[in-house]
Image 1 (spheres, rainbow, N blue to C red):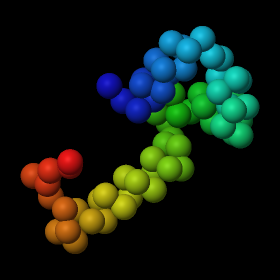
Image 2 (tube, rainbow, N blue to C red; image 1 turned 90 degrees about the horizontal axis):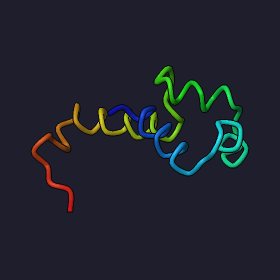
Image 3 (cartoon, helix red, strand yellow; image 1 turned 135 degrees about the vertical axis):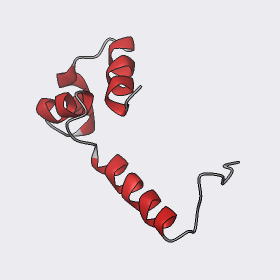
Image 4 (spheres, helix red, strand yellow; image 1 turned 60 degrees about the horizontal axis):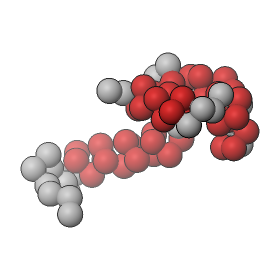
Length: 68
């Protein structure tokens, strides 16, 4: 399941429209739509992905690392 699919599932489970979620997050409805369609990542997710890829490329973390 993609991040977009998870976001959409959680939003719908709470009975929220894209407009309502967007208003609470301070973004446009189009941004929420694009996240749910996996066209773009929310900025926080993009930063996390980039940091993890950077750490992995430096060998500072590996796929075998355990998270407590």
